[in-house]
Length: 139
Length: 132
Image (cartoon, rainbow over all chains, first blue to last red; front, side, top):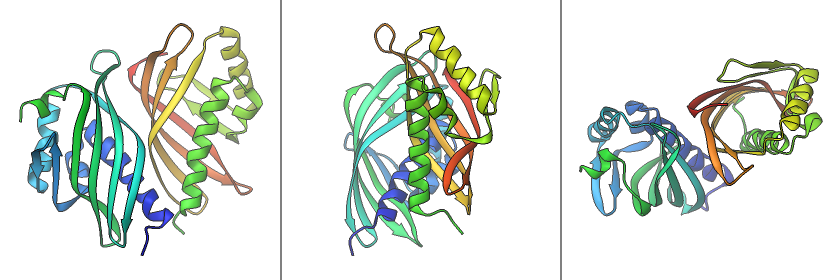
């Protein structure tokens, strides 16, 4: 069955929750947007796989002391039943001291619907311009 | 009853109308985004309350000559029945001389459905970077 408008809206809202949680360093909330076996890849490298690693990813980001804000746009959602693909842009700003664009990147994600809720199964992000934040560079 | 997708889309559109009307200095239309007893609480401690105050606030903004555009993203809408909470990001950009972001922040709003239309009852904005 094709995805409904409600499915697509929930997926877009999942992106908002992802961004809120990573930007405000809420590790458990961030892990909640992934499936239990969820993975984050950046430029073809696995950065975090599974809940404990995802939680640690946020703790590591917090230790850098950097303040980042993720600004998404251009979501394209395709899929059927309980599986979806999401492609979108993101522009992340470093707001530690002023407001400075940090990195512009593209996501190409796999999502699954578990117990009625959409989750990221694999989130892949590829840089288009700028630099990764420190906690991603060091992996 | 949980909010429908239609409700959520209308609330996101309300936020867009808020941004467009404040940027175009349209006092009456901006005030229309709020409930009659609506309240705006800014991160700098400013409070604007009630329709007459909203229109006066916009008159002052227009008189300042400052050209601004409000950008929003990362909407999260939660609620039931005729009451909702909207969280979203804000970036305000000064376009008076080039394009210069000067504020980034988060809204955390209370929205109510009045006569079939969603309105801001309380719009709270906290600044993450920059300032007004």
